[in-house]
Amino acid sequence: MPFESRLFVKTSLIALVFAFVAGAYMAIAEALGHPVARIWAVEHAHLAFVGWLVNVVMGIALWMLPLARERYPHTSGRYPAGAPIAIYALLNGGLVVRILSEPFLETGALARGALFVSALAQVAAVALFAYVAWHRVRAPARPAPGVR
Image 1 (cartoon, helix red, strand yellow):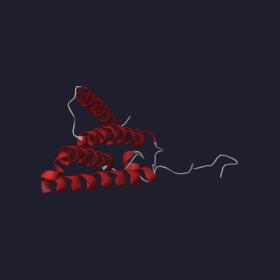
Image 2 (cartoon, helix red, strand yellow):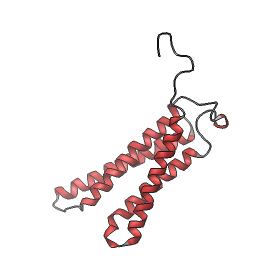
Image 3 (cartoon, rainbow, N blue to C red):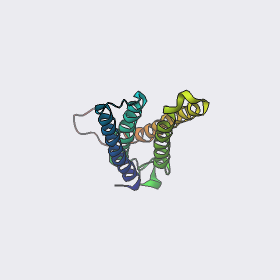
Image 4 (tube, one colour):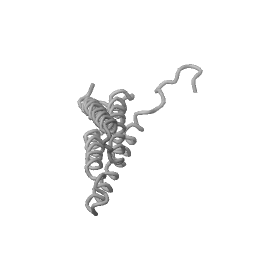
């Protein structure tokens, strides 16, 4: 498994543990009669969805999608050099900024600006990932007999 794929998958495992710890904390607090602000459920969902699911899907896809050797010869057909690290930084940087800023949206423009930047970063990450994956999802070089 390439380094970049391992980075995504290991990050996803860390996020999975954090998401379950956060979920357990919120459930225990509620069970003990200590209400938890609703925004933390939103942050928990983002940690689980983006932190775990999106990272694991991207990591495995970067590893398992068919190679495009003619398009990316310098990386043995995997992706443009630096693209996976840029995707990783945008996706996970955006996630961290979101989790840190969103609970403070009512306190001022700094939190709103940070949330805006985090959203743009994550959209850029997904767009760059889609660009890389798009070129690796293609028809077979020689279709099997009877297959169109």
